[in-house]
Length: 432
Image (tube, rainbow, N blue to C red; front, top):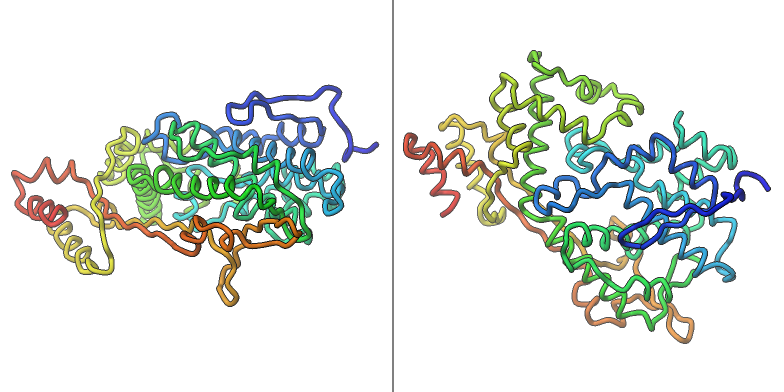
């Protein structure tokens, strides 16, 4: 039979609050779940700093990865199987790509990536292809199998239908994280009728499409995504925590580069500061490691690192005001000068942060980034881009919403405003 087709003697299930049960029958899937690199995802939160706003948002990349796998398993086993457009030989590759699509996420994902100029997708492929337990399992299928899985995640795999199930504007990744994040944050925005979407999803040569009778379920899905981004993912308080987290790492990096003697030397970060890190260094990092450093750095001699670390650990976050860079472009320069006069380093305590999202778009020839549109399959068999049939989707297509905020330590300024008139002037300017 061979390892590729080997089944477990008895089906394994994970009890899941979103999908009820996650089913595993393929031995290779079960073996991959048991690897150290996949188990590491238990120690990486799905929503980074959002737990400091929505206290239930403690769920992990591990949970999400299993959820994406389950959605794809249902699509290919229940929806696509037996249809002429679907190649059964692609089944296992698709399942493993779904399971491993987030394997390379680092601790506090995007903040960590931004500071060290990293890309989690590159690390996902590196773990799949490197000297790892995951690679050893995948190679038992065939010597080429790890590369095929990596190509699906890298969007270079020749079967575009397979890629679209993992990465498109209506993919299993988004369908899981919207529902999962809504469940754990306690909000209602991320809920949509996934059962209906899965029932009307069909394979085509280029991508998965949706029967036209399912258009309203897709509208609901797109609007759920829009609401989740602005109510949860871009929540200004969560962004404040991410700003502080980023500044902690920037400060530690600067101190390291200037020869500062740490009370607690950043052993786990040293190779990242030096740009000499190996894949194993990356795999060794998780959010528990980072939080431990932050806890110890609250006692550092450097007042900026100690204060920022204490703020993050004890949730004493920066306040924010709305900021319009088009009309207030001189404001940050003036404020920076006042901060310096007041003895507050603006590089760490005055931060402009921007959030931007495009809820849905369709490909426009000549644009830099191609976006795979959502197609409806009409009763005639014609494929029609959804905004041509849906007034709701048409109204938001291509409309990017961007939000800018200015973050600052209001508590520090309030505390010192009676003794230092500059603090009062800064507060007046920020609030004015």
